[in-house]
Length: 237
Image (cartoon, one colour):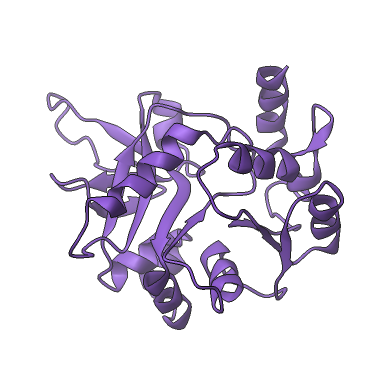
């Protein structure tokens, strides 16, 4: 499932921007399909422009309600009546989505017979201090079994002792959910931490859900700003 809002506060209509001959959202859809991992791939959108673009290019799309707090809510509405076990959420602004990373988040459910894991997500190491301090970059810290402890726009952990070798991880917005966890999510009201940070993954933690983080070294480019789009065009070419 690829949730796709037309409006975006930092970069309006970013999903319909041209990325070397095709809109960003179509590039992302095709990347997800081309992994060969999924029985079905859908774009879930509140926009007739995005819906028509996907369908006109032979893809599958679902129209959803205009008002949703986040992508998880949009996907939950779309899958409510579907007979599925695992749903993967690929962000619409991730045209460099790759098979290896997605396979990693799906694989954790095969090794979880007791169904301890509610959802899985991706993280990648970051070393650039500008990125570590950038509030647009969501950071994650994990326990010794790679379960998420917290997500933040601030640098976490805070490097009080400069002599400690600290590793920083960026959260990549790709999730794999058990359907039950996703359906629970939409019923749960937003609490203070999520409202403060504006990071939907925090809601799962606030309600005691277990998020297994999978490390990937594939960084790609998420298109949040016009500058990101310029970078993506150069890489694509």
